[in-house]
Length: 499
Ligand code: NOJ
Ligand code: NOJ
Figure 1 (cartoon, protein in one colour):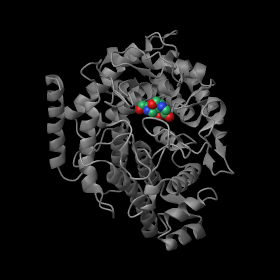
Figure 2: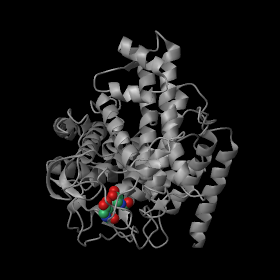
Figure 3: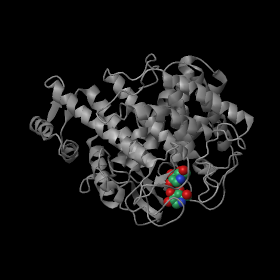
Figure 4: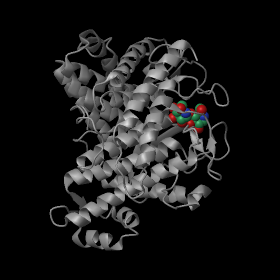
């Protein structure tokens, strides 16, 4: 470790210890996962920071993993980098303004500057280029390209940053670099939004880099990026662009509707496949990961949509059956993989395994659903979500009977039962966390996957995205607890940009 990195890690460690010594961040649920989670929340941050701005690379670079061979993940993937930096941005706004928050904020600014370098590179995949070496030059070897979720995810992260700069009135030069109303533009966000607007109809490779088709994940990321971008364009005096971006997002949403397969009871991850692997059924955890990116309140495909509940149940049932480790159900929800037919074992092709980031994504889903239903003050039962609720409440049949006889459980009418159902959602989220806890190693590190038969870690070590997923789940749980009026953190309420 170079001196600089050592100093940086040490200072993060110091501040994290202060966090640790302050009263409980994560209040208990029945499983009592909170104390462990609190420590893990800190540990994951330290591990993640280790993977940012490597000594041999440009500032703001996020290596997917430190692993340089078997597999070689020592690159900045546009997708992984943008998702990680979204988490870093969330951390920069979490709790009090303090030096850790500021260090996180600086990392996001480094990332903005790096994004400009990436965008200005000559690449075979245009802005949909997939991954870059840590020195900022593109990887141009054979690969599944373009991957058009990249510009969308990058725009989502940087638009959040731009909103913050605008409201804080800080970094005016950077704000202009991020967004201006020029056409053609050289500003970072607008370039991505223009690219999305022009290319969303194209076939491209999915987030798992295997199928060339139209993808639910990519489309929902594109629609969210355009809507968030349109809000920014309004603020920055670019009303016609805002209209245009909105219009494109609405058109994408119409395409997204086509992914719903009523006979399957799930959204299909891809349609109109033209090349790439051919053995996928379309049931895929990426649909849930896509939803988690979409925190817009105006969206039809948002957290309240009962079709996700049905998709979640399908995925859980399928992964329960195919992974041997899922036979152990004691206080644990099933380990979740990418999709049932997956063959990628982390280094080569044999049989796919469960992944940390998908299992954690499911935990986050349950916390977010609990939060949304609690705010809505009612839990509706529909023909589409009926099985989901029956399964969730299988140990509390009296609650399911109440729900199904009334067709909705309203807080105002029966607060005790309403809150009991919310607690069941929290417990389920905690059970996914408990699953992950079991399969990570004693040093609290998380690789990409864990073995479907024996549960030991597999694939690229210290995967950045795994840590980011843990942090997002922990934050989600914390917002939920705050809204429930249960203790979450000692610090004042987070800033308005936070949910
Ligand atoms: C094959 C995997 O299935 C894919 O998801 C991965 O991105 C590439 N190999 C590169 O590691
Ligand atoms: C393989 C995954 O399929 C892909 O989504 C990811 O971007 C790369 N690994 C790097 O983590």
